[in-house]
Image (spheres, rainbow, N blue to C red):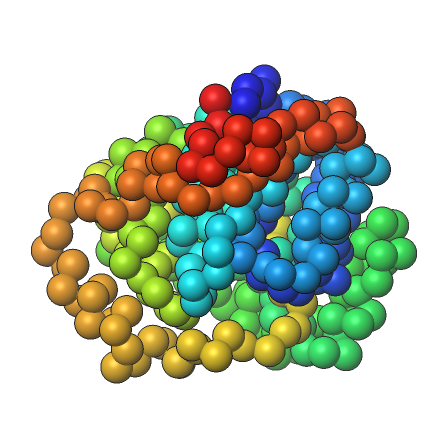
Length: 300
């Protein structure tokens, strides 16, 4: 598939279609959407009506939209994101989670700050179930007043923003911390390290690993938290969640890779020709899909 977009927004998803619908709605309200932007929903093997949510979004907005997915074999967000990169064309990549509602200035902030050799790191306020329910379609569409955060939430974000500025000022290693629910970088920088390492299965540390390899490649992290932030809708944690991934296979692998190079041996390029399924909409019409090409096809 081909596209004239200069930016792709990659949105992860797995069987939380109502959250994904609100996340996509917030993207349709972005101030910079007059630019050439494509949307890719990077799915982790949903078996519910997630596909229909993406189809409705593509038809209603007319935005260039792609849905990628694969058979679900446990929690694999790194694989989902890599697939989305392979099935997109734009030179600049912005990543968010499908549980994140983004304010209207999200896109323009990242585009204004983008630089070669820099990954822009954001953060999202974690909403509880009640706060998440109040973030309705109407609130997202008018956005006259962003969701009210508790004093503790505001304090946490202000403190993190202040620390991030200090980290950048003094070039502290692995800081500011890159969280995969809100970051952006150039495709060339992502490809330089071969994307996310596919050896991380289950929750945790695939984003820390990517940041470490980017740092080894000379790509530094800079925070945009003082300018924009997401709002993370509540959902139950994945069953593989362990706080800080302590004593997990992911932690052991992460520690083993400490002295490895910047290029993942099992990453982005190893998915070419794999079992990814995709659907691609252009101007609200389904223009291409893996169903038209048979199994193991690769978008062109």
